[in-house]
Length: 167
Image (cartoon, rainbow, N blue to C red; front, top):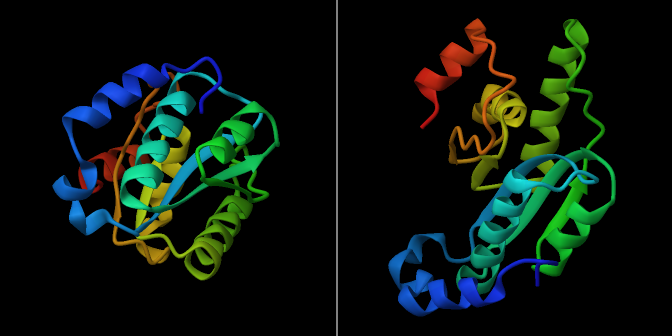
């Protein structure tokens, strides 16, 4: 399953709860994780893969990860649990009007091609990007699911608005 992961711990968790019985409304739903770059694999990415594994295994969910590039270990881990990595050429470093055009294009791509029911961004930057566009993606729900220490949070007007409005 996950290289270096603790499969025994996942098995223990599965013994205590049957996710299909506990969360029947999530069975077969489409989840899109916002993951960044597929060459980088650390703690937040590992958590995302663990969660994706459970969604696929217990709820037969359609799970995809959108990333801005790469095809490394993270992409391999995603495929190993039955999810799909999808590369979208997004440059989060742009700070001009081009950023807005990229965001509109990304929202359209997500709505038309990936059609998620739920959006799960996993680190601060992805929370900002996905949080800013989720109303236009067709997803029913998105939450600020930050799993890093928040080193990139700068207190911008966008972050303040998203933290007030995202569940």
